[in-house]
Image 1: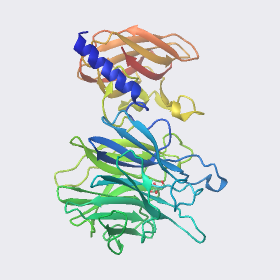
Image 2: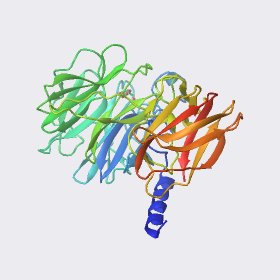
Image 3: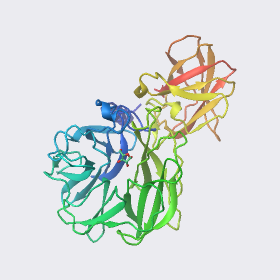
Image 4: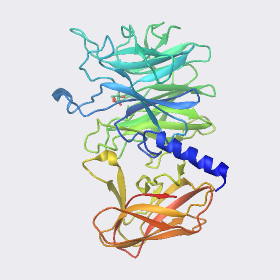
Length: 446
Ligand code: FUB
């Protein structure tokens, strides 16, 4: 390896080590629950402002949403996320009832040198009911944010979203008692018009508005219960205040029955992304959710192509990082399943089970760089003793290694030499050879 390559590799390793959560793949934040993900591009990075679900410490919310604070995360490549810590909590907002645990879906926008963080919560005070929306202001996208003394006068509701139009006029959207919009004053913390209802939306429960503009079209997007749980849907118009024309569904109901979905849509480095949530780490309780990302594409007429949720998510995974095939891009119908590594500790992630001769799992977008990888390390286990083939996928199906896994009941880290390792970005496949049963946690190259 020459000096330039060695430096490049060191830099990549540093990038990996100093990131606080693991690589891409869904869910994207892997050490805490993150719901209602609002993504924004600030200072050339993606900033993520989600709600922070927690298992409730108070009896009355054991079966409900429970959120005490907000973290902010950032990423340059959508695969490594830095947690900047808590930016606002129910204890440090003067108007919020301190033990309400109601810090629901937020948004953040930039204007004239300041970052404005909008969040709903339960106001303190006798006879105060429902939700209000407040603002906290910062010089930086990651804080510190200073909360305003009072919530915004005139808003009763949740899920604020702010759009600043080309002419500088800011609009705030929210849900609760219908779907509303009002103009914001230049100071960004007061309404500048009476709230009005959004026109042109379909019947059925709606919340979580996210509004953006693309090529002269205003997209009013929202979670919508068409049948029994929330889809993500959208309407378009030529004015930020509507009326809008309903266009259809961006993401269908979850087949697993997670009741809520909540999203944001953002363009970053010439690609559009859908951020949304699912209860990946909490399959039995859908109020503990996890943020995900998938690619989003527009048709030439400006309509949005429906997004199928994936486990693979977005981005490229470096071959020298741990690659988790349980976040697959494709999987054989027979002889495969995915399970938690430890059901009692969901944040440890998942494993792939292959239990039929020829069963396979594929993972796309692995970057082998140009270093010439020498070895593969697999965290793997097999009660029966089995062999796994590691190869590229069509059209270059070259075999890189065959991993013989001795019978045993615990995880083993098996290291073996690889051959024919390619350069650049490729899709890889793991398949079971000759039957038996194998569990794969991760593989990586070095
Ligand atoms: O996270 C609490 C609530 O669940 C949000 O405000 C809604 O949009 C739904 O996602």
